[in-house]
Image (cartoon, rainbow, N blue to C red; front, side, top):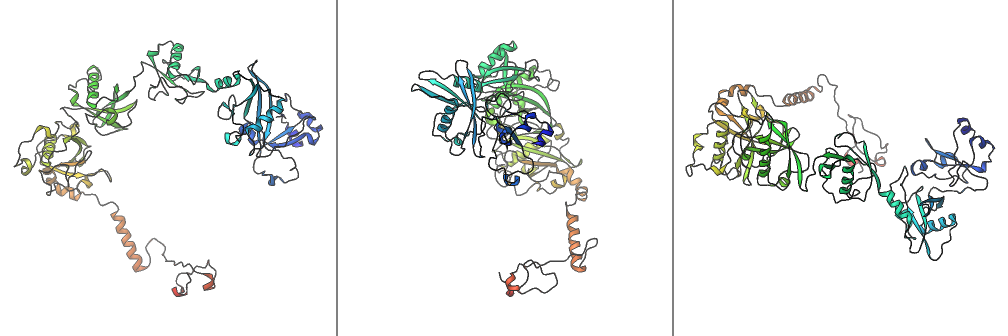
Length: 603
């Protein structure tokens, strides 16, 4: 007490109904000790209710009461005529409030202490009626309403009538410090407290921006979370001076547009203090998405345009929509290009990398994973028509420039999956300007190469097209393992003579699939530079280290030491039984000393 007086801290009484402290700081010195007590304050910081008292435990040591580290205590005083109520750690202290329907407000406040494990709703009711001095008539009943969290700085807001009187308090999830509203209701009357607190429960302040200031969420509207999104949109449109068809709503600036205008605000996850984004422009219909299209040129993406599309339209129909926008575009990157929808290649955009090419006959919803507002797609402008149908596969072809000692990025080739190896060779020769070996240039059974075996088209990367007519060489590689370099390309199986030129490209052993990677080269250039390539082969990674390790081991075995290292010595550790050896179990036999034989050990 003297320590508290020296620090000059104010003293307040938590006793219910007390408008002033039972004692001021200056009066503490004159109070008798039976009017002052300490109790736990840690629970009060969380739940708003003071914790356990220490009645009858004044003579116990602090450590036996659980005091350690830093503890928060409450110094509580009482009036002379009001006795202290002892509170155990497991007890529940609830704030009870009596509702006055005439004033539409709380008229009396008090608190009750209930035994935590045994307390029921009926015990709460009886204790509250006794505190308030209420005696119910035959035509009256009491409404009990748990309103924890409403208007408080802690707890989740709720408004729950307590109807089952034999229900344990603990099963309802109630903790110390919660508020319980009591209202006397006559038979046939509607309870006012329930309507009032349900209104508080669903009342929320929603922050939003003006369409002209998208980055400033400085506007606020008070609404009921039970109203629909359309009603909120109408209210916001009136506030900002727009019609409802001139704005749209989002959860945030980068989120998809809301289209569930018949849903309630609470079902959309909005709470008091939530923020929404108000955008200028008409809302999109259900099933429509806003797609961001980037121009893919020389392996780099450039922002091109934004297109609103229906998720059920096909990829080919989407290309037609994009083509119409390109014809009106003033972008210098596409202004001089001329073509139709079949000369557009759409593909997924994965960060800075280009993804797969969707098939023309699939819907956008099926062809593009996670289709939503803001989805980014790449667009390539081709020099010849290309169609990706259900019977086509897309191969990635990389050209090894033997003279330059580089390997180009992948260029996609669309080819029918029923094509023969001979057709693939011819296709690669046409696309990359290389001649095909005479032995497979013609099929003795069918020398005519039909147009429907593959789609026409050239690699869009101009660096992939060669000058001259060198001989075509081909090998298949895998997407797994380290990135392909010149050293790795020399180890591939080139121009496999066991492959049947008239077999299907999807059959074993070639087994080409969507995304398979082929590497091609100019065989004439390779033969001319074969000597330089073999001499410049990079050493096998780690070979010098392995050879050094072998030399070190050989030196250790012969000379019993390695230069630059301390002499190594083997250690033998045996697990033994003290009873059989008569020694301490933690004993470890040093290296070099004789060990007991296996027969002496006792497993």
